[in-house]
Image: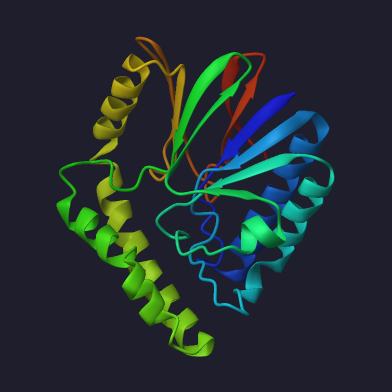
Length: 240
């Protein structure tokens, strides 16, 4: 049975036509997971913005939530590693969806391989501006304060800010691609067999000394994903 890993769909960030294409391709991926998968890892930024109130969540993503629930009902284990656009999670996925949530990274074993799965935002040490912004946005007091805004105000505002953040990071991520490979090398040297990272939106599968570095790419343009089966890592793309 296979492990599937995908990231960076940024649902809610594009036109209706593009969003429908993303959702349809997620549906196709989930069909593959149902056919031979036992575990699925969402490696961050499934949503372009996610925020939970005590009694409310964003309603526009109901189709994908239903599809995730259906996978869980079939006995497929799902892990969600939060990214830089969906880190404002509370307990909805764990208590209502039975999906394990991991902040930033996940360590696991599959098929005799030791894996480190990381979303990857903030890995580049030279990106000091973003690293500072990350600390501010994830501050517990700031999150508490933001929840005081009514959802009909807070969600459109946050989506606007999220779009600006996406444009900011997309201009810099290609510059920092070498830093991500260097990070993978360091972790492989530390005993991992496979290091998988998202965030860059650049599909990469590279054999390095000590193991394999994978960047899962995105589910916006490349529709790429990692499939690990019988200890073999493949970077695949949906066709059509």
